[in-house]
Image 1 (cartoon, rainbow, N blue to C red):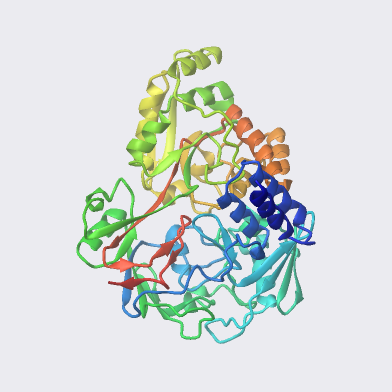
Image 2: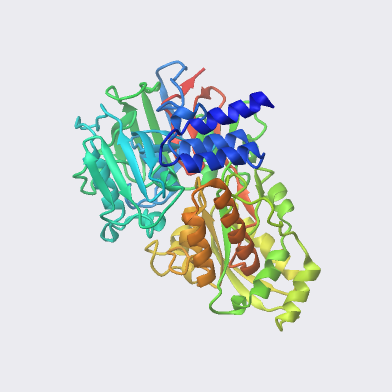
Amino acid sequence: MITRRRTLDVLRRRAGALPSAPLWNAAVDEFAAGAIGRRDLMRYAALLGLAGTGLAAPGARAQTPAGKPGGTVRVGLLTPTGAINPVTLADPPSIGLVAQVGEYLIVDDPDLTLRPGLAESWKSDAGAKVWTVTIRRGVKFHDGRTLSARDVVATFERLTDPATGSHALSILAGILSKGGTRQVDDDTVEFRLDAPNGNFPYLISSDTYNAVILPADYAGDFESNFNATGPFKLEQYTPKVGASFVRNPDYWGPKALPDRVEFTFFADEPSQVLAIQAGQVDIINYSPQGGQALLNDPAYRILRVGSSAHTQVHLRTDQGPFQDKRIRQALALTLNREGLVKGLLQGDGVVGNDSPFSPLFPSTDPAVPQRKQDVAKAKALLAEAGVPDGFAVTLTTQKFDEIPDYAVLIQNAARQIGIAIDLNVKDQAAYYGKAVFGQSDWLDSVLGITDYGHRGTPNAVLNAAFRSTGSWNAAHFKNPDYDRLLADYTSALDLPAQRAAAGRLQAFLLEETPVIISYFSDSLKVTSAALSGVRYTAISQLYFDQASFA
């Protein structure tokens, strides 16, 4: 008991007189009470920038490469959907390409622990409204220019400017505005937020994949040079065909092991499977629907990373039958969530509870009751809503990963309570429309299924998909009570306050059910057995600097 008390006292003293000390001490109290484990405490230490706690990851990189140098890693990738521009991209293939050259202030590792990247350190004021970041010295862009705070300021001014078409606005809007990023000196940047945000370091990390640090004078010509700071630099890029990158000899950190990384673009996942079976590529994306033939073959290895990625079944709340929340709840109650994880995902995922709060997040409240299949209750809700015999509706969605199969399973489940669903499955371009935030089946359909990528916190999805003015709000859910609960969660600074606010949000979304989130899917890759050292994130970044061949 004395030893444990001394350990806790040492932990409390780690933050010293820093403004964030009260937040840290609240987390230590949670740890002492058994409400959080060591891993969550470690994540929180890193979030606050407390590398000196002895718990947060101290290094700039995960580890020094230990494999054999040399060789070319050949990657199979789906064809990027448009021009490669870090400011506006949103598709996984483009994210994977940019990861070869681009770097972030902070790195969000697969276990959701933050560590230094181009930022050596970060800290907040006592109210978590002003965050100060110290930039790493000695970093050079591929064109030879030295990175400075000026480049960081310009990057975030670009990302927060509505005139640039920045995809990061879906995350940063209402949190960091244009003019809120300021240079203190050559090595220091200050972020002045629109409102307090205890999770802000995640929003300027690799978690926001658009936040690649680019030169201050970047003019949108990324495809011509891929000029950034990373361990590889561009050799050649041919749209619709492929790309290659070579080791950056002037990289600030440990030099990459491979000589080259070569990407070949494919139209679909079956083509990638055939390519790896033919020995044409060394790594591809893996999905249970398309890669079963590789699962038990010793010539390959399956890599898995836990993820908050999910599909949202949006139920339009402003028109049609789903205006009545009892009908929304009824459809949600028809689904066998455990069966979906076991069958649809082949066990590579976890059950969801109709909110974006994944079990991965330290702030998620596990005490909120889990929604389970209950067909009798679903029928009773339909009767209460005045449609005891059900109704007909069209489900519009996309051809991507498991989604078409999921749509069929929803169709079959809904039939149990008399809801007749007609499926309208389109290719991704048609589903999302010409512009991400313009008119599209995604935002206009009464019932649809949309894929949402992994994030290190739920903030981005809570803000964009559910807030009354959210840019991804396909359910057209406009509820001032939700907006207030979201503001409470966003401004909660310590872990106990975050979990309490999260619990209220989780319960509210479970009651209102503007979307159905029945599972969170793991992120998987398949590589040849000879390739090791590959690192990747569930958000689609691929890292090959530590990769080597046996």
